[in-house]
Image 1 (cartoon, rainbow, N blue to C red):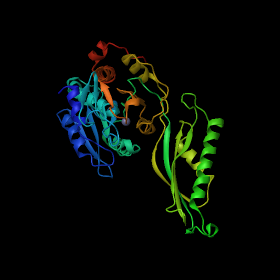
Image 2: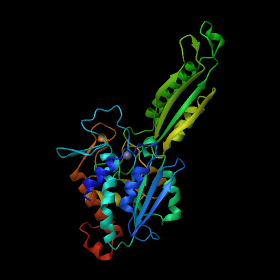
Image 3: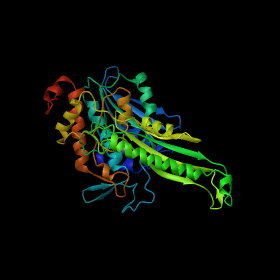
Image 4: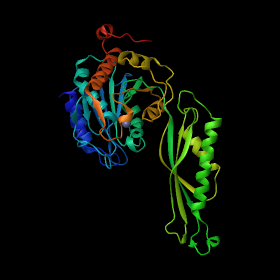
Length: 382
Ligand SMILES: [Zn+2]
């Protein structure tokens, strides 16, 4: 099968997060279930599947390639073709997930026969997660199983769309729902009740104030734009009718933290600052990706792709979770993040081919046999 055929097959499966993912799992595993591949379908508590496939010896450290199999919905978007049918428009391959990130998955799967033909001295692991698009909910269950299944990987390449520029860092994020309880009553005598909307509104203004303090006083990390942790209220809701004193109001807030200032700390600060009868619930969270101590992988990938190393990006990925588990991680994948989650998301064949070339060269250099390493066209910059 060609790379484009594999991508078309994956795009045709609308693998929305938070729904059963047997179909996409079966399709991916069909490419992996062959002699020489150690294949695990790993269940999550929600009844969905992560996949871990290893080629080469699993008892020595190797390299991990990571991607998520879920895609965001196309509902409410104006597509010029069926989002779940890969469609060529000029040099664009249009379809949901082409950039984010079934293009990378297709490259991974297309490389498998090639990897099997190599005499790998170190393993290549393919880690494919579920439920990434609803706050990286699937991958922690995969990461928790790794110590039982493989030697700790030397590095992980997370193939989120970066136009094949290696990315060193991103912020962490926590999304929290804060609920305010009031005391209901008739609007004819507001003083006899307790209006939950006022409490929520005061809280929202406090969020604004704290966001300003973060902006003005830091802490700062100049790799990021903006160079500080951020906080904002994104949704506010409460009340049922204009003549009833509202007894409930909720505010959704989101904190994004630089690596030295985790989002949990920002959230803890704002909640500690506002103790009156509020309950909170974490809806989603992932840690920041901190720059790896050893930047050599990123520099090698940049050499191979002809791109510059990027210090930090504004979006979040599973790389923060892999890094927190002790696996040095870098983001490097085909396509562009600006196309993700939009109508007419696309990728180009030359982008997929560049990704394939870069990954293959890196794998030969890190995991290949000695002859292949000596013949590798790009020397590792260690
Ligand atoms: Zn993604």
